[in-house]
Image (cartoon, rainbow, N blue to C red; front, side, top):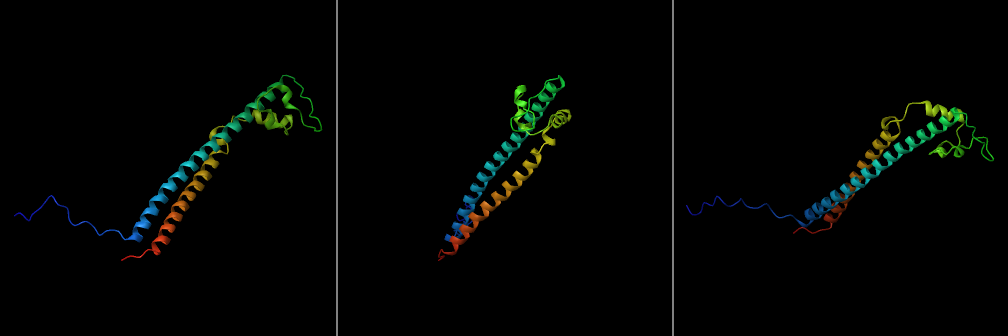
Length: 158
């Protein structure tokens, strides 16, 4: 009865060969690098999309201000060396986004509904950014796996 040892586990699996260790190690490094690439890509994508949305909002607010001044009878002087009105004289924020728009175009922008996140280019930027980020993370993982596979080919298994 003394040879029964229920507390012991079965024999451990065979130890990994040097080649298998190379591949396993480089897979782990590749996974860590891919996660890093994904985190950086997602963060960058979100920042770019939010910046695009804020830019569109600023442009809309500037158009509202300019159209409000125009509707009160304010006459914008012409730019020097240009036939476009100089909107900077009105003191509106974001006037520079409409530097090469006529007053009728600016009023049309102001009369349009206010842009929301979904009506701007932001969702498209998010989609493309996430797609590119995913592909770059996958390529990063595969490159490290291939390096490990290549190194494993040069090891000698005894």
